[in-house]
Image 1 (spheres, rainbow, N blue to C red):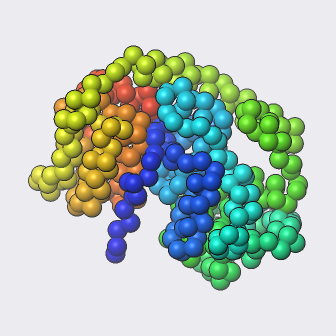
Image 2: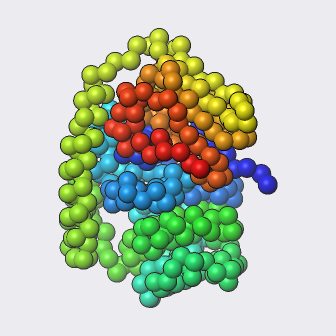
Image 3: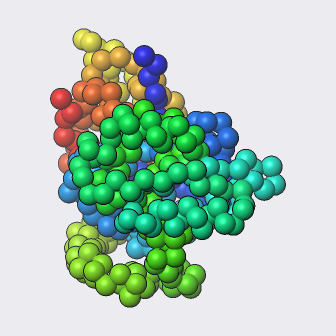
Length: 374
């Protein structure tokens, strides 16, 4: 069986424990159109604040985001946090806005048309969304829908269900279940689906169908879309209240300390220039031996070492004995390697990390990397 290796050329940064691609709306749209045209499988994740908080507590949920092929920031609080940490994110790329961008560009200016299949939503909503899209007679065509109800992921993953989707020959499978269930459903079935693009975009079906109205653009950009969503769906107030409380805790425990540490710490250029990233075989293990500082200044060397480690055989051991510094960019790429180990059920262990390196991981909410994968 051919191994599917992570794309380490992605420019990703670790924010609150998750890898996010540094892309704007136009770039994300282009990537998805290209993947669709090439029939190259792309699992899209759009983590918002609720996603991030849930991933801090749920390893399986977090793994679905880590193993996605494109992960964009869908939430202004995450953008603000990234900026506070000195990361170069400038805009939010919400799942709904990204879908609208795909819809408006499909079939135009040399871009291929796009066939959509909706999976999920309340009874009647997915059908209405299909009717609205096809009434436009644009470059996006709805080719099917299914409302699976509220069963388990296993109940929704029957061979008959997968066959119905594949027989419709969609380019983009839009899933709208609860966040955890939707991500898990895609992760479970992604290799059996003959679909290029797939992703959980929970509110998209409602917005397309018109059963829920989208907040005005100025509300979205101001970070107040949560208030608009509560107006449209009052039951959401409890989720936003709990998320807000957790966000305050994160600001105090990791974001503010992380931002202060980033401003205080100035890593000498020599530590990046002289950094060592060696991949070697030892006693049946693949060892990734790190020394010095690893981050944006030597990211090309780092990505090459990660690719070599991903291609190697045997349990993966990351030796941090001489590692002095690792930044958000290097951590984002390392998380992709960790996700590959999860997918392949490949043992993983980080050894000999100093208290300073451990603290760096904690401030990025990436301390889970220190736990071995059996």
